[in-house]
Image (cartoon, rainbow over all chains, first blue to last red; front, side, top):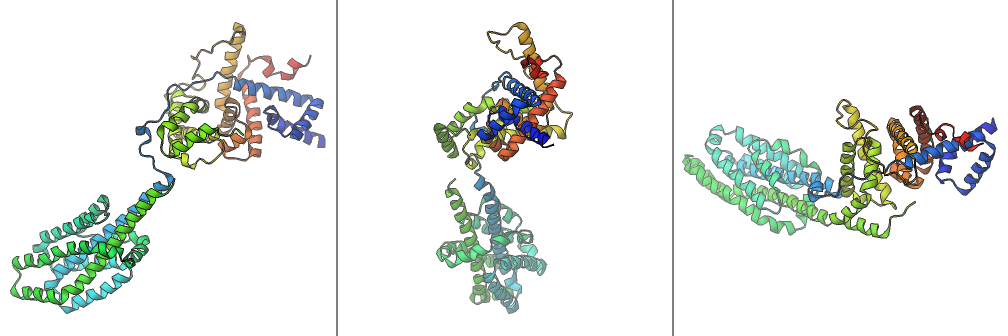
Amino acid sequence: MTLFNRHNRYRNQLSAYVDNQLSAGDTKAVDQHLATCDACRQELEGLRAIALAVRDLPSVAAPRSFALTPELVGERPAPARERLPQFAGGMRLAGAALAVALAVVLTGDVTNVPLGGDGGQSERSATADMMLETDNSVIDNGSDFAASPASQPPADAASEDPKTQEQLDAAGRDSDNCPVASGEGGDSGVASATAPAVTTAPEPVGVTATPAAGVDKGVTAGDCVPAAGGIDSPAVGAPDGQAEGGADDKSAESLSQADDGGLSTVRVIEIALAVALAAVLISVLATAVANRRTPR
Amino acid sequence: MVETQPDEQDLIARSRDGDLAAFNRLVERYQNPLYKLCLRMLSAPQAAEDAAQDAFISAYRSIERFRGATFRAWLFRIAANACYDELRRRRSRPAVSLDAPVGEEDTLAIDLPNPGPSPEEHAQRSELNRALKRSLAALPDEQRLTIVLCDVQGLDYAEIAVAMNVSLGTVKSRVSRARSRLRELVQEHGELLPDRFRHASEERDP
């Protein structure tokens, strides 16, 4: 029994023995066993013969060169970079969502001013505070704004539709000119701006932490001012168009009143949104630059 | 274990930096053995060609992940994976095979006869090779890869361990099992084989 076990153990080592892959001690032990075991000697010869036969198969050459061309490999995506576009894509989506939110607030602002009294404005200033705290709520509130002005004044909405679209486009273009706002993100944001900020809203949850930090840095504030200004101007211009468009004197008066008191509150919201947007854009830029510099 | 040579290290380093010309020198160096591995694994020239090309492409794309001491084994692992992919595809749609039938892939290749062998010996050798190829093709994939790495490519066990991503002990038992199984298959297939494949010891012992 013990003898049979030992025989099996040696038998299993014969291939490694053929390949010279046994330790000196094991080789010696197998040698000793072979001297006394016909079956193992026979097995050894068979294994050796088959190994040699395979080794002696006619050699094959590659039928052609497998040299790589730039077309074959394309742009080599570094493994680290492979995952980053998704992250950057998320950030861009967040930027687009913020841009949409900003556009929506602007639109809501412009369309609401003639109708909404003080109540509407204080409501908005409350939401402005919330926006400054969490970016999530920025987007949620933004989408609320999208819903309310569109449904509340149907008549106005109908007459103003082209104007609204222009503003949205302007906002979209502004965000495109802003540091990054990648083409895809910006485009999709603008395209869907009229209705569905809701769909983009859930996406950027993971991103929201960074912009807050960015805002604190003050570097971003400087960058944002032109953006906010750029977006502001069409908003200011819009009421004129509205007045011309057949709104009565009363609404024109309320507009001028709003110019003094109300617009400043709304502007706070707009600037806050613009700051958040710029912060997201800058963090997108920063990650992109960092990725490029990551040593491979 | 065969260490990667210094000039190879240099080529690898340059390939990491995206130097395609440097990588192509590695391709040049390894395309014959790598194609051979694919051919023995797949037994079909066109599929082997595709697998070899795929292997080089993915090697280039992931060369920054190469940290090992032996580039050859790492490269073979990638080639083996490309072959496994093809075998899996083949199994998922077994009817579609326009390639040459198994084992016939290089019957047209004329072995340059060694100065010595007589016509009979040569015929015997061809018969043996056919039987070997058929038997190789009949082995389970993993055992076939083991034989290809060990006996076709001549890797040592440490390199095989890298190429198959297993331990040395596992390599040892895999080689042992694969070789025994191959021997059985050759014996089944090759009734006209030289005696030494069937009565190895009798030939030696008077």
